[in-house]
Image 1 (cartoon, helix red, strand yellow):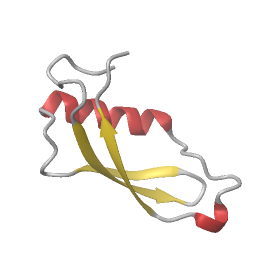
Image 2: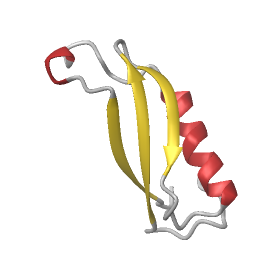
Image 3: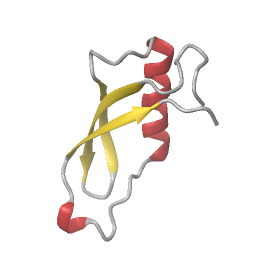
Image 4: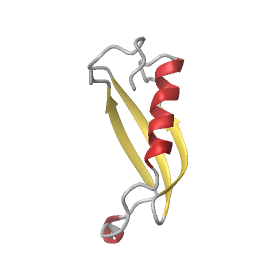
Length: 75
């Protein structure tokens, strides 16, 4: 759920540290992210809720650090 304080279309860079198997070890929001604190918490909660992230079948390309650009959208 996008907090009302985060305008639709704004992007936020997120660094996710993973363990093999897709378990999320950490979620770091880029300091330049234009989201307010509520938006940042929302992104972090979404990443943690989505774990384990896809791993099976992707082992050959697995990387421990994933950079994602979240873009706020209306539902």
